[in-house]
Image 1: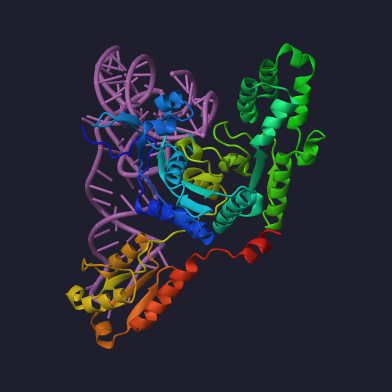
Image 2: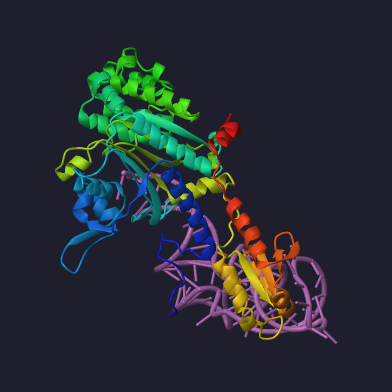
Length: 451
RNA sequence: GCGGAAGUAGCUCAGCAGGUAGAGCGUCGGGUUGUGGUCCCGAAUGUCGCGGGUUCGAGCCCCGUCUUUCGCCCCA
C-alpha cells in the first residue's frame, strides 16, 4: 500500500503559496501588535496535563485534547489554548516584570475536533494580553488593537461588529435581579450562548425549565425575555445605570467611540462560555451572512494568574484564530494576490552563461535582491514561463552582450514592459516595488474610508 | 456520537438501459539558432478509493469498508 500524500486529518500542509498567505496574516499581526508596544513570547507546545485541568474539565481533556504519557510516565497535553500557558509564565515572574506588561504570541494549537467550516484540529491563534491594568483602559487598548489589525487587512467598519458585555453585569442580572442560584445562572448562560441556534419555541421551553415553579409564577420568563431585548445599556432595568459594571461598559464604549471604533454594540446575550472571565467580555463577529460567526473574542480574566499561588494580576486579552480570520478575509475578498519572496528571476542567454553570470548575480544579491537563476540552459521561452508560473514579478535577462555592457534588461512580467538598466538602478526599481506593495493603512485613511 | 454529500488523469469534472474511459486546464516536446502570457501540432498519465457480491460483462446495480467534505452535538 502506497503511503498517503494527505496531511493528518484536520491539519494542513502549507505549500509555498499557502505559507505566503500565513506569512502575510502573521506579518500584519506582528506589525500591529508591536506598533502598540506588545512584545512577542512563545512557549512549548506540550504542557503538563494538570495545567489544563484547573477548571476540573476532565471531560474536555479526555475528548478534545491530544493527551499522552511520555517516556517518563508524565501525562502531557498538546496545548489547546495559550491562556493557561501565558498565565503560568506571568506567575513565574510575577515579582520582576515591569507592569503593565504587554505580550503577544501566535501559537499553533491542537484540539481533537470533528471538523467543519472554520474549525480544524491544528490552527494558529493570535493571543494578545495586557497585564497589570485595573481600569477599562486595558479593554480599550486591546479592542482598539484588534480593530486596527482588521483594518490593516483592508477591512471596513461595516464588515464586522464588536459586541460587548460584562460577566459582572450578567451576574448582577441573573443572581441579583432574576434571583437565580449559581447552578441556574450557569445553565442559563449556556442556554443563551446557544440562543440563535435554537428555535424561539425551543429556547422558551428550555428557559422555562431553568426556573423554579415560584420563579415561573412571578413571571421570570417574561423578565428574562425583556432583558434579552436590551440593545443598549439604557434598556436595562432602572437602577442598573449606577451599577459599577454598567458604568465600566459605558466608559469603555465612550472611549472606543472617541478612538473611532464606530462599530461597537452592547449585547446582553454575549456569554463566551463561563470559565475564567471576570468582567467585560467581547467578541468580534463577521457581519456577512454567509460567514456569520464570531471571529475572535476575549475579555478580562483577573483571576487566572493567581491560580499559580501568587497574587492575582489584572489581565485583559483576546485570541483570534487564523482559520476564522482567513474565512473573513476571503468572504470580503480582502486577501491580496501574494507573490513569492523572490524579487527577480534571471533568464540566462547563450552557452555556459551560468558560470559567466555568477559575478553579476552575486552583485545583485549583495545589494539585497532575492534572485533566482534558471540554470537549465533551456530556450528562453521556457525560462520565462517558469518565472511567470512561479509568480515572480520581474525577470532579468543576462547574456554575453549584457555582461559586456553591464546593462541588464529588466522586465516587468505582469505588464510586459522592459528596460535596460545598470544593476544599481535595477535594485532601486525592484526594492521600490517591494516596499510599496503592502503598506499598512494610516489612521487618517481608516477614518476617511469609514466615515 | 448523529445526519447529508462526494470519491474517475496532476487539477476541475463529464460518462450512464450496465458493453473493459473522455473533455478542459495543467505538464512535457515541437512550430529552426537572444525573449512569456494568443494560436497551431504532437506526447505522457488512470488497477474509475478499497474489498466482496449480482451479471456473459460493472465506473455505472447491491453489501461492506476507508477517506474527504458540509452540518448537528460540543466548543476552554
